[in-house]
Length: 157
Image 1 (tube, rainbow, N blue to C red):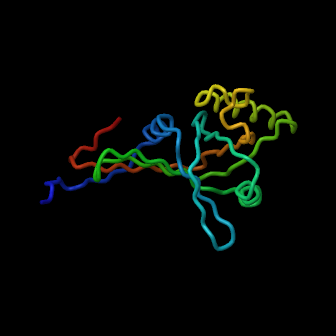
Image 2 (cartoon, helix red, strand yellow; image 1 turned 180 degrees about the vertical axis):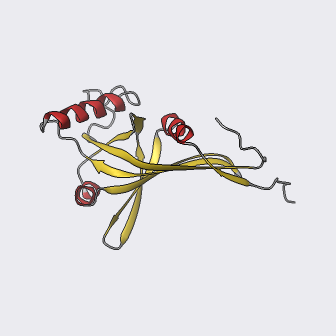
């Protein structure tokens, strides 16, 4: 037996709606390329001041991103098959140096303080993931959002 469903309606989200969605969530997917391969990884993040802040550890992903910094980032909020919202961000990832120029230091501190909104113990002795000591920042270059709903007027959150 199949369930009766309405006809899905798709629409664009306004920038303010995209930003609200980014603020509401803290797990997204980071997509990046190297040569002929596209990779995508889940990450914890915090959105603030037009930036996506997160943390990671040194490794292959960082080696690739240092040389190929343009990325895509996506989050989804799914209520049902035809009731969802999605945001895709394109931007450039940076790794602010806490020992670098004053602007780098300031951006590093901003990243640490912003990420502590999500994990208050981050970057302290009580840090639950102390090996993830590298701050990264994605400057939102452009952002698009989509919404799907089964009603003619998409519900806005």
